[in-house]
Length: 456
Ligand code: ADP
Image 1 (cartoon, rainbow, N blue to C red):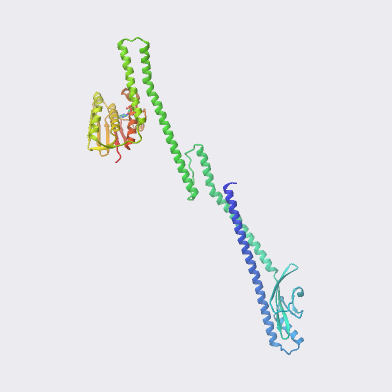
Image 2: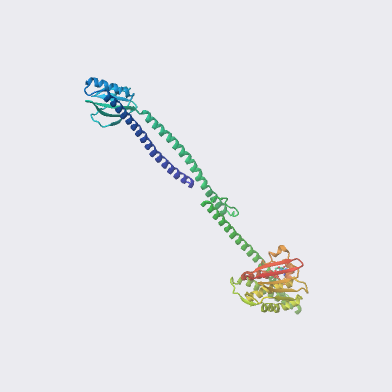
């Protein structure tokens, strides 16, 4: 059984029990009250009849009057106040009656002065009898009011029927509303189920469209947040996988070229008798390739092995800059791209060796991108270190990708200058470890600035 069906069935059962039991209590009370009122009215009528006719009899008749005369006088007085429901009895003899039924059937005349109220059913007719004895002169007279209350019972039956109809309709309307609202409130759960199915099929772009402010709405929000989180985790994993694939294919490519070249040269050296000059040429080629492979391996190791946490301490900018200057001096002099340095701060918190490696890479890149005579500027101010060159610049659309492993804007040009496409990957990794915000500004033909904004 589905949830909405179960909730509806329980609600309907509760509604039915509540309405029927309330109706039953109300109807029983109403019936009792109507019958009580009818009895009370009849009693009042009978009492009025007694006091009226006995008052008149006492006024006109005397004790000494002959008994036969008294009887007919009392009969006369009774008839003056009697209606079609009144009965007068004396010593078992009916002195006055206008009833359509034989009053003897109805009147168990008891010889006491207590008021008697009872009901009888004669030929489908409900009869209410209220009677009492009254002493007049020397005799006892019984006065009865006999009422046909069939209509009262018919009215009660009609009232019960009307009540049942109204309660029945109310129950039907209640059931429809209940089923509708239960169905409505469980509908979002069906959407949630459908959505869960879509997500299990990998459709992470879907979102649940429920905006109610109840628990279901909150569940939908939580569900959407969960899908968003799953989607972003998957995207991250895909990105990582993509980067790893690029890394591996770049790595394979970078290793393959020097390996092939070394194989060719060693094969030639082993299989052919070369003169001394050619042998030296081949060996120096193998040596170059080995050095290249070694430097590539060093960079790769640094990128892979770098700890996730580094310990920074205040480092003198002057000391760091002079060290970089000395380390780059030979290369920069060879290329005739002088390094200028400016700083107006004493120190910054950093890891000395890693920062040296980062800045040497940037200075080297700046130098490779510059023409002879163009200077590189290494600058420090506030919490910023900048490396600026006036070289060829980087196309805007490439800036985002130049920190990717093995990415080179112009591979043949970079390779000619000993590039591997790993320098900026290492730069980015070291910057991230320091919590540095790396900003690259470049204009084609005008130059490039790498800005390292240190955390304050
Ligand atoms: P590489 O070993 O080739 O220098 P990097 O990761 O250091 O590798 O740089 C990636 C690419 O970004 C380079 O091949 C070069 O095309 C470009 N690049 C880096 N720095 C600069 C710069 N200062 N000016 C122009 N292009 C640059």
